[in-house]
Amino acid sequence: MKGPEHGAILQRDGKTYGISTRTAAGIITPDHLERVAGVARKYGVPLVKITSGQRIGLFGIPEGDLPGIFRDLGVDADRTGGPCLHYVQACLGTETCKYGNQDSLGLARSAEARFRDRIYPAKLKMGISGCPRCCGESHTRDIGIMGTSRGWTVIFGGNSGTRPRIGDIIARNLSGEEALDLAERLLEFYRNHAKPKERTARFMERTGMDTLRSELLSLIPYIPLEKVN
Image (cartoon, rainbow, N blue to C red):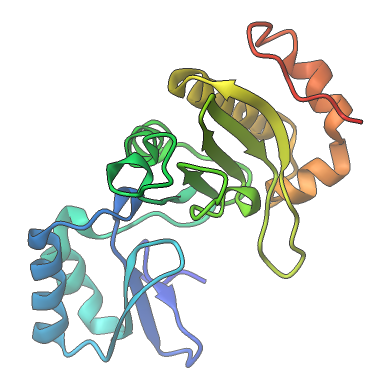
């Protein structure tokens, strides 16, 4: 349930709200941290927490403080909500991790910029991992992209909610641009055929991999889709 300010979420007590900040790929600058800290002190925000989606959440906010907090946070405030991309989660990839095969932070930034303002049948979460250890939780996100020594693997239809589902591997050994292009075509197919509020996990359970393959092969003949045994 949304509060009077778009992007504010009514909390369990039915009186206060939560706001998240937008942190593409989980990257936070000192200026961002100082702005959030200043807002938390100014308005006496009782709880500030890193969320599972690598965002900073401010919780326990009275309704009357919402306009001021949104104003003070400015572009850092996440006003998304409902059927859109909520976040792109990413590991450190080749930036610092000794296991990284691919630049997960760079690809996550590109994915955030490419998909963040689009509307879909239900909310979306993306996870990008620089290696098969999958610290970006790619297998349990609506769109998962995982790096190997040979390129990117694209995964679709994962979910970690009350009915968890491991996503389907769609294609392997792709370039970064091919991976994002495939993600875009998958999401376009999903947008055109999913029911309202149907997450990608339930969509894949209903439609099946064979249907997805037959539809996508004509669109992306340059990408070899994963075969089902």
